[in-house]
Image 1 (cartoon, rainbow, N blue to C red):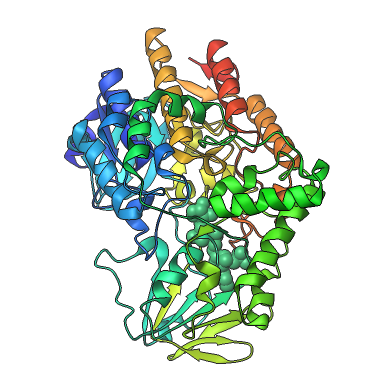
Image 2: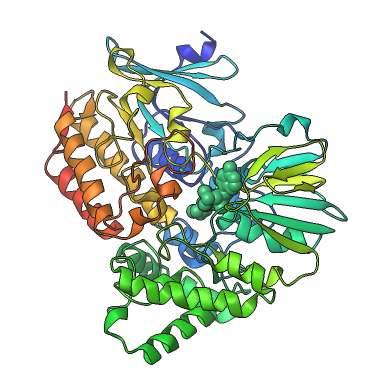
Length: 536
Ligand code: NA7
């Protein structure tokens, strides 16, 4: 054990993104605990530290994509665009970390490789890649939902003579695409953001699409002085709105139903939503995510848009041959994505029809042809939600491994605690709204709840909190029930279900009951002296 083992902490937080920074502030400055954050990256930022790919930008609008715990902070910070770009989010998180003097308690370049609960001492022992050991009573994971990059196990990558990159592990110095032939695999939110930017530089971009995807224009613009002023003056109202919406966004889902709206009027509504742009498109009708008939109207509208934008009929057909309901997979928003296929230096390969079989020295080989490229970009997503937790080798009571407990899929209570893993809290864990919510809203709610919970435990002179197995059973059922009332599980290849990772159990992971309901449940549990948890 290193010297660090001698320093016993009240709480250890893993990750210094949005979640870890705020959790540190809560536990250290509000409860006065001794806290340390371990962060694998060389700086704060989490997702935004790693995802530096061309075009990386948040899909939440900037005036709701920030912390709301401090109105002073909300008045001090000013976003420049409708959607914050990666570099600006990094500036913001560094600004917050400096303003609240958080970095002194963050140890960077420290990847956690194991976390073990010791029953006799009621302490967690956490080890890092470089062999350091830390001891803490409470362990909080703030590792994000999309931080374990998925590079598909397609044979031959080691033979490829060019360069390759995964978008979630992008080099800090950037990649120069000028004059290069680029092959990009993946058309999720990331690929859809990256393609237009790469195409503008590269000699040629070939996009390899497995599942065709919907996308709605983001309509990003610089913010006007009036809007910036409005945000400063209405910081409290904006915060209140994000607490009153299903998914923590700044807009409400409309009350009207698509199935009850005459086709012509519906078309006008979709057209207006398309022009306004952004994720708000899915809020056009309240039945869009629960009625297939309603959803079909949105799906049909977007497919027609794709065919009207993309000039080559064959490419348009491949792009619009979408097999799942709109927004049943995470719906991307874009800047000129479909327009990019009208460029002479961009082509599309349908790898559903002709799968990628291997990489050669020269490029990407499908069942039909070899595509020579200089650079391969993997926009192939993540081992989402459970991946970041499972790779840390977490062991609870009796040295039981989390990977064994979750062999058939994640099981926990409120997405916050796992039976058999006392005093371990998982911010935005599977089973919580997390990725179905505007992330900072979900994160603040979790970090506040955890802080109040630890405060309660200490005030009562208690030592330990642990989810009861029966509460876990109930919660898993609730997560499944609410998901099954929506169309979300119909996208059978979605990462919400773990379907993008070969061999991963197919379980719908995020809580689809909405942030309002979830917040109420968490509040009720706390008000009932942490019902469903064993305290000792
Ligand atoms: P996503 O949404 O998981 O997208 C990954 C894309 O990569 C998707 O189109 C996949 O096709 C494709 N993919 C993955 N593996 C392969 C293989 N083996 N062959 C061909 N194509 C493949 O990840 P993103 O990074 O775009 O977005 C993640 C989230 O970040 C996003 O949802 C937002 O919440 C922010 P598939 O659909 O699986 O057929």
